[in-house]
Length: 72
Image (cartoon, rainbow, N blue to C red; front, side, top):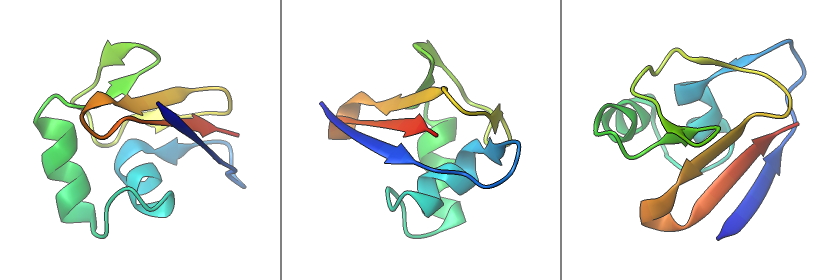
């Protein structure tokens, strides 16, 4: 599985914004669809909340495309 480390400048980033910011999706609408489909895990657990606040050290994985994003 490929791991991407995405640095954030603030205290947190929302899940849908992280998917856009890291280049996984082109738009927020696509990010919303992927998240609501149950294909995204945050720290090993399925997460369907597109507004989930992610902080440094959190790991987002999308097994369908073989990618993990580490929030840094």
